[in-house]
Length: 220
Image 1 (spheres, one colour):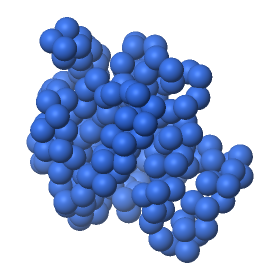
Image 2 (cartoon, rainbow, N blue to C red):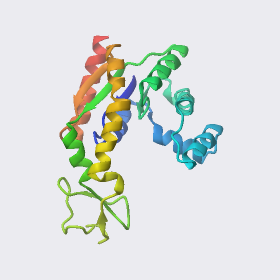
Image 3 (tube, rainbow, N blue to C red):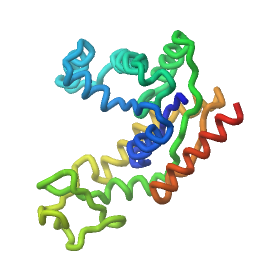
């Protein structure tokens, strides 16, 4: 299957993308991973992307699209892929359509992870990270430390990242509503959108997504 995964910040896209790609036996293609891989390998596209990032500018759509094209042409993506973080806007969605058309391929589904805005704010603004080890992550509501402000694992100080403050989260949501959400309507016009709730345990959400994708495939 060829799938695009969409949803607001805090919807659990990263977690579900990895799980769904593994269950479906297709590669998970993340924009962040593409940038990191191209930059670390010092490819021509990676050097170009880094020049924009170092200058504090957004990487142009054409560079992102070229990286995605290169990745989708790899042998492991022959039977399908799951795109996470791309397309990010309607112009990228149109470019993806043209790219797939040129390769005589089509998308099977656009999986939309739906979550209420206040839940997004609660999920992200409640995160606390250990200063000693950023892999030690807690949440003031869902997974609180035994002692407030102290890491259960190493005793380090827990803090809230600037990116996780409520004001920043709400700004990120505004960007999502303005730039990314319109692609849902774009794909609805092609009858590709499958919407599921991203509330509940991680395993339940994965199962919900797999069942929805299975139904979508059976109906085509």
